Length: 164
Image (cartoon, rainbow, N blue to C red):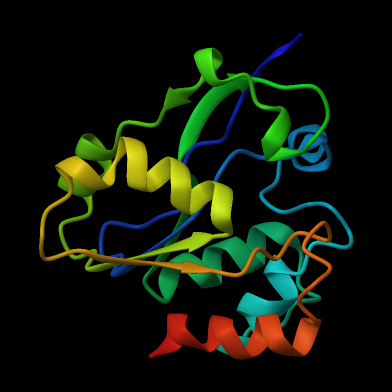
């Protein structure tokens, strides 16, 4: 099974909000972009909430997202997994990103939003126990097309929380 490595965070030092996934899927890894799967709702939803143009090229969307004070990363920096499903991650292969260094470099972050249950579970298990108590975290519904029990409208309504 291949060892997969994630991406560096999209962030600027003035970030106030961190959004975390679990680990990039196959389409994202192939494209070298967060949430590159064409049916993943992340960019359409986040752009709608933040008033960004989702049709902009990836680099421009990422830049504007970061300029607004948002950071994007994953709980895992590496793992072994066949395909894209979080359920297929080999638990013994998980390498958690260095959150102590990340939060030290981004002292203004006060909120963390987790994109789905897997990200929230991993964060709760591996990061939250050492988290500064002033940082609040909340699980949001996954924007993945695998989360078909939530409509786009319901996901969009839940994700409004990131702009509050």
